[in-house]
Image (cartoon, rainbow, N blue to C red):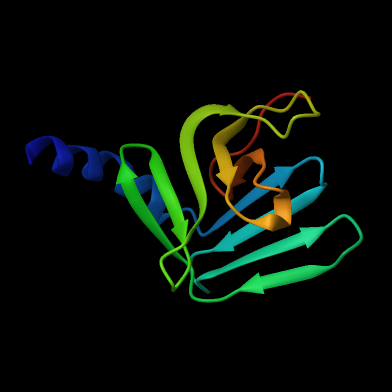
Length: 122
């Protein structure tokens, strides 16, 4: 129990300040944006088509492991704060590695950044 509380104490300050998490994917070229304040996950394709999923919650699963969960309990995305995220094309290194579980990205992997933790590289 002490370990769980310690992990939450370490992770909670980072998540509490991450109002927006933006992820990029390739093949297909799609981005997703999670808004903590609005509890929405928005997917946008390269041609500008948007799909908004309402009532999405962010759940802490372990230290540095987060899930974006729809109101029906489906895990939409699993994020790992490991500083090894990649969109599969650029030389950017993203703070979050993400596994998307939707047809929007063909269940793709990508990289994510927040408004406080930014990608690095060219």
